[in-house]
Length: 201
Image (cartoon, rainbow, N blue to C red):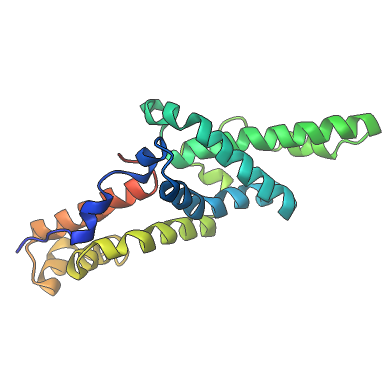
């Protein structure tokens, strides 16, 4: 038996990331709800106050608005999260550079130390800049958004395979599916999840 996507899945065939170039308010809201907490986390993790971290988040998304076309047409940018971290890292450097210039006039060094603590190169996935728990929350937000687009057995096949790490044959027997249907279900959900995270068109 094969599995087909739920009727609502067709409504999301176009990536929200692609829709952002047309200034779709819903797509932008989706971006901020999904990635806003992560950008805020980056700011706080690098020593910003709550207020400055909120300002950083606004600055990052403002830059995204001006550069989204460049990302969409440049595959070498890697994942969206990696690209977003590059923007955030530059904004963090700008913030600490401004602080450093102010502190230099007063003979301080704290801002310079913070500035030098932000490595020039991070992995494309930005793992080194992100607490593992924050990444889990990001994926959870994405999963919660796409769950309603799939039939129960499609989702169960995906979950049992990727989260519970059961074998394909065991899942097929448990759900009354063919092994190929289990593999297709896993692939379909993962593909949709990548789109939700901005890493697929």
